[in-house]
Length: 151
Image (cartoon, rainbow, N blue to C red; front, side, top):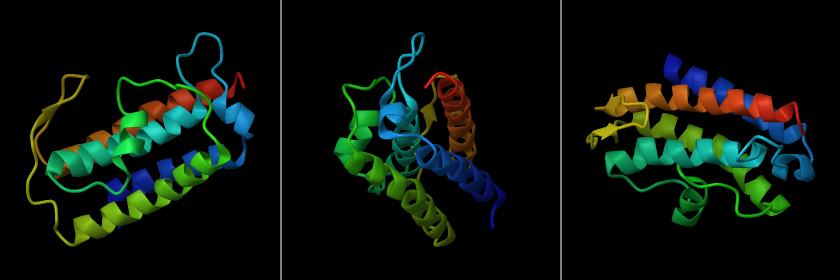
């Protein structure tokens, strides 16, 4: 397996364990000093991956527009998510990664619209986007670990 996907698979497994080891109440809790919660950060990883990899490649996403818009950059929790939404996020953590691996192997990422991230790094192609996505998911995994100490 391509190392970039091995890294993302490891990150996604960590996020799945967070879902397994926290109650719905804990997933939704926003501790003092934080602007979001565990479940928002996990869903944000899925939403951002879909934007960085698919939307910027001019391809249809594997998550709904509603989902992407609810958890995209610049949003925050607008209320508690339901168990059904947690279940959807659980499925998306695996299916979006599997689909990306399959699509990359099949060479569907032919075009990429350059994008400068909020960190000032310009994504120029799919390989850069895949690398940056892992960096981004790593940042949010760190935030998740910090929030986890307070829920």
